[in-house]
Image 1 (cartoon, rainbow, N blue to C red):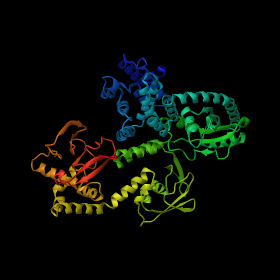
Image 2 (cartoon, rainbow, N blue to C red):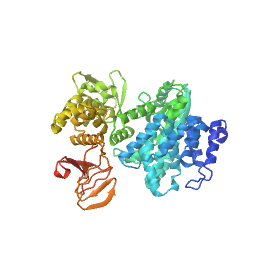
Image 3 (cartoon, one colour):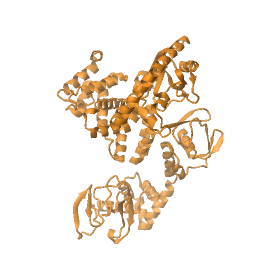
Image 4 (cartoon, rainbow, N blue to C red):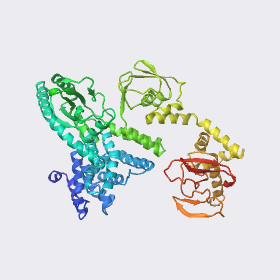
Length: 619
């Protein structure tokens, strides 16, 4: 391998530099640490990575584990390698074994790095794959934690990016540590079943190759493929199956790789001439590619002795993309003329969601659904394919076409029949959307809309269409509370200072939030008082809402000073309650990250100005 790399001065210099810096460092196994960067660089090379990626594979741990800075990496190996190393270093700091809100923020960081250069995540996935291959040297607790994170985050991400081979390795290795008994059992059963089907597959491969060549079809390769263990486990455990391993048809599959897309269909005709096809088991994933770019024809036939056999047919380019996904893009980008891949478009879509969904749990839920949910394929009347998540509705379909189509949908015709807007779409449905300029979204749509595009579009429409109404209502609320003088305050510079204090773009946005219920009047009053004091040269301090003469407890947790009565928050901020006086009572003491509810009070305990108590949801 090193002899091959010597042909590239960049790669060889990176190897020598990593070897020098990691000298004296050892892995948990006792092996020299340099074994890990070499393995990562080898995997990247196997996936078709360019010299910059391979060099970054050697150097990906250098900034984190040695005294070398990213600036020095740039000076020695160029800005491109520095950028890749910095991206992988930043991803190494991301910890997904955390609360949902922290996971969401870590996903944001990951996708920001991926958007800057998609090669970063390829390097990170190869890094994770080699670490999973050496997981046996860690404690049982760490094995389970890392395997869970891999199965929940990195394997689905590899799948979504089309990196099938990496995804299978990650799933099987995670399965090995999370379900060791089941892993061992299935491995033994698959070995026995594989031996039983080996002759069937070998004979079918030979027959197919000979028949294809006889029909002048270019045969790149005819391979045998056995279902990987975690996928087999899913098939056996799925409620709709509950099958034994010998009942699963695609345990063993013949994979046929031919020269071109057109030859795939010719090869299908040959296979169906050789073997009897099983009705309803043909899938044309070439005409309807998966969102991760996967294309192939899948069919199941009756082989020798009446045993079922799976056959997959694809072109050379389809095979590369199926195996390596986004990593294969560098091989084919010259042929595609710089056309952006589906995976890159998906990453940009996720970044758009980031901007629209300010609430971290909502963004996290949206991303999880898009990563892990199954898809459904529907068609426009012109035959265009629209890919949506499973259980999507005509509303999701309309917003997928265009936001304005979604905003004005009034009727939907599915396969020639008028259907309700909450109908779940099925594969192959032909959807005709009827719009009307007078039609507008309904808040009830949020109860059944499934896709982020639809749910965000509905919310944006209500925010925009009701803004003036909410501004008027918010202004009236303030005037009712503080009198007509408040109107002059809102129109003066003081109004802008108050809205800035509450992190709004302008006074109108603050009033709209007040009118819609997102902000409460005491928050504006509190901000107004604070700004007034600051303009008078008096620095604002936190009010103490409990009686200063009462007994106190000296314990401080998360910035909360606990007393026998309601207690003032000094540093713990709650989104949406900026500037509002609120306290954590002694009855339940909710901690950051737990579900909470609020109780508004105007009692004397709050000095007549009103405030809120924050309780745990179960209190």
